[in-house]
Length: 236
Image (cartoon, rainbow, N blue to C red; front, side):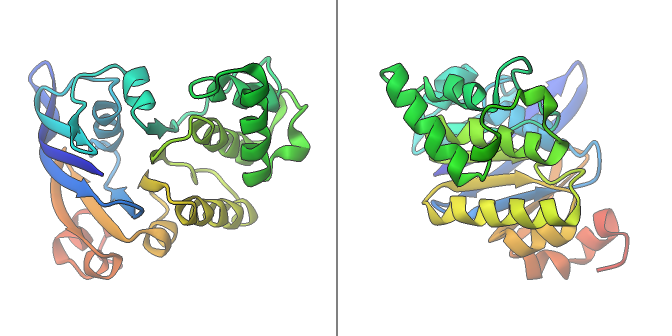
């Protein structure tokens, strides 16, 4: 579904991402891990059009998307969440999702129908009339996922959707992400929570200092000495 070929992103003379290549298969969950400053979010920003790649190519379903605008890439079937959630604070939860649904919806009624479906799916329907600024962090993170799902993506990029959640919220979010995959949506996820990433990912890519140092199944990554040295702190 997604091919990233020799992608680099420079800021001045600094390579935030350097010659990274990997692919994402249809209906899999690909985890992206690495220490702070490894280039994970920058890579997401390049993939979904916030930054133009300095070098390399990106293909979504065989079509080149490198350098396209975020809205064009979203229309092509890729949606994402952000590490720092920024809902439309003065709008209700329902209206936040309706706004995203208009990417595909041809009428207000259709946008409302999509929003209802997505809010029920993400278990936010009871909060539909709440102003988004009044939601606790766990539900704001879920609203971010709901807004992305309302664009009807084929590929969903999740940037630290589990950060700051309590154990009950973690379990709920894991359950929802597994349901998203069951519905045929492919997922790329950046996450620091190692138990989460190991439990939900089919494959994992490891970045450090902007470079890919490993790729494989959770078991292969867990037992990779270079990954243990660079990221897992020798704990395995």
